[in-house]
Amino acid sequence: MTFLFLIGCKDTTTKEVVTTLDAKTLMSGSTQSFIGLWDLGDAPGVSGEFKDDAVRVISNSLAPIVGSEAIKNSFVETFAEGSNFKNSHITVGTIETRLLSDEILIGAGTFKILDANNETLESGKWGNVYRYKDGKVKFLLESAHRIFTLTKKMLKVYRCFLQKMQFKM
Image (cartoon, rainbow, N blue to C red; front, side, top):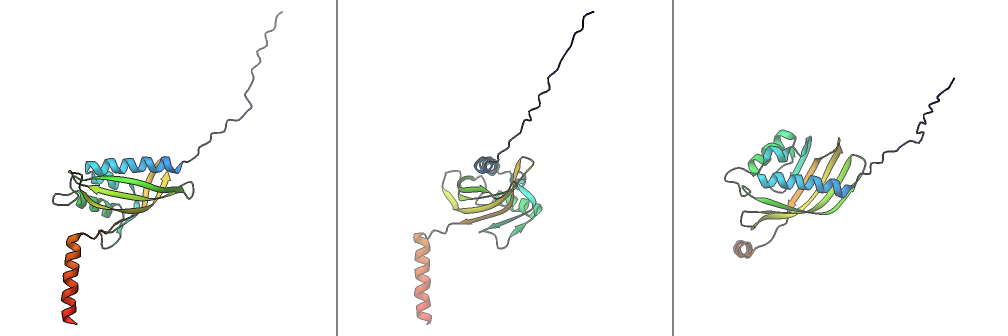
């Protein structure tokens, strides 16, 4: 009589899955998505980069823009016929980015919005807060403000204003 023993060895070592969140990689993916959607003039797409309860605080708005519907409408207006930003494209530079937790990401940088002839329409700085969840980065807060540049024409108007004010004093 012959016995055949089959002995199976179970791998008793545990395999640890390490997932390290990299703020720069997360920010880069989010930024590239935003740029691509902006350049297409895709208002629903750009607004889809925001959480439903997100807030936009931008220099060309008199009040914060709160919630998904208001944010979508703000981008519809941005890309509408007659808007200075119709058919524009955007460049974005990231200066700082870091994770505050496993879900909260912050970033800061610069932006430039250009027309079809690459003339600058607006440029400025941004500082945003994002949520990273289920493999996606979405805006919680967008804060973007243009850099005010005094042009020769504006300076001439300002000087004229000052001259008129002196006569009234």
